[in-house]
Amino acid sequence: MKVARIALLVFSGLSFAWAGTVSLITNGDFESGTTAGWTATTMPAFGNTAGSCNAGFAAQSAATGCVPGTNPAFGTFAAYSSTSFPAIADDVGEWVNLLSQDFLVPSGITAGNLTFEYATTWAGSGSFRGVNVLAELLQGSTVLQAIDLEVNPEFDGSVSWTPSSTDVTSTLAANAGQILTLELFSLAFYDTRDPVSESSATTLNTGFDQVQITATTGVPEPNSGSLASGAFLLILAAKFARH
Image 1 (cartoon, helix red, strand yellow):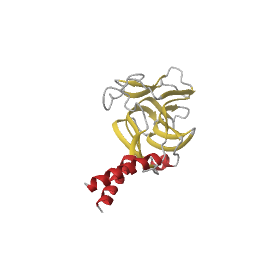
Image 2 (tube, one colour):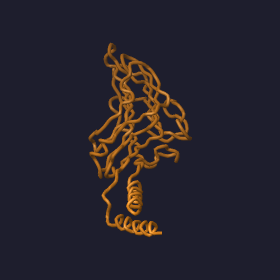
Image 3 (cartoon, one colour):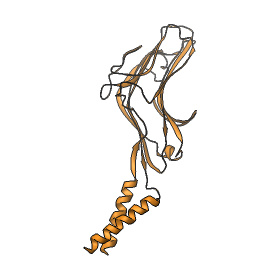
């Protein structure tokens, strides 16, 4: 009975060793002072953006660029993008800035969580502000899960650094062994063709910090190596019990 109890403890210890939590995103705090590991993309301008300013995502120690924003949530750096438009009547224009990273989804997912802090400031005119700030999980060009942070607010405004936490377990588990993409998205547009319902974002500053996806994996089937290790530990346990 004593050997059986020791064996149970040994195999329980092996099970805990096999399970664990892994981080799937690199350089999510941008403390390298760069966006290394990420791809920063500015999509081609839509419509008339003459005279506008657009600064794509970059690691900064202070939110500078076209328009200022807040300083990093933690540490020295965060990732910022910014856009500003001049006053353009009877026209339409748009800028989209993206920050993305590919990652491999491990097998045996039992829990997954996407966390980050974000801050944004915007101003404009009209019935609503042409501002979209969000985070997405994609497979190729297909959006699997989206987290809307600001979508066409009605008034000028700002959000100081705010934590966001989203359960992505089902999305990760359904795509085990696949390469997915985390995309951080900042869009500003204006449409002044109709003075009654015009929408305009004259300025937008967006920041992301402490970006991470954590995945907890369950206990896999033991392979021959782990079985051999378990047998060896059982032998030691038996000897210990005899003494």
